[in-house]
Image 1 (cartoon, helix red, strand yellow):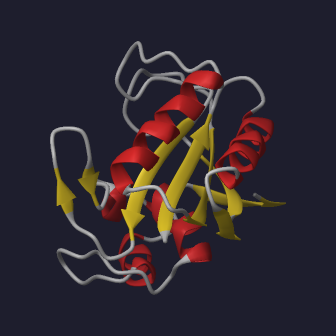
Image 2 (image 1 turned 90 degrees about the vertical axis):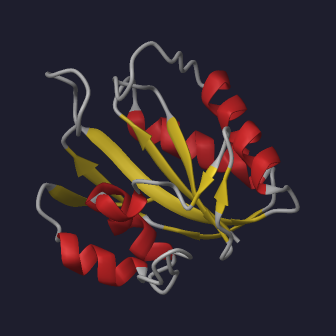
Length: 160
């Protein structure tokens, strides 16, 4: 099972997240989706619009590396251009985890290296896989979210 975080803060973010979910469903079977959360931009240039964030789990025959390339392709199809780190974006797709695998290659690190430090990733992830554990530390998603708290997060009355 692959765990994917989705985010957007330009254009129509909710539509972008839902369109990405539809495209990702072509890569396998979406087995769970999260609520949508609104958060302030973290890092990057000042004055960015708020983000909408969500997560989904995907059963897919693709390897982690092939899935990551597919995610980058979906971002590109949405119009995303990578101009500055942590800048505003039409769509951001992050492969957070893939089963219990730990990977560290020049092109892909699993689990995502900052996932367990960010409430805006953990809150949606807790909706789809609260028991999933960081393969390095053994920490559960729900425990990490409890540790960080929900400050700055607003759960919308929308599911992905």
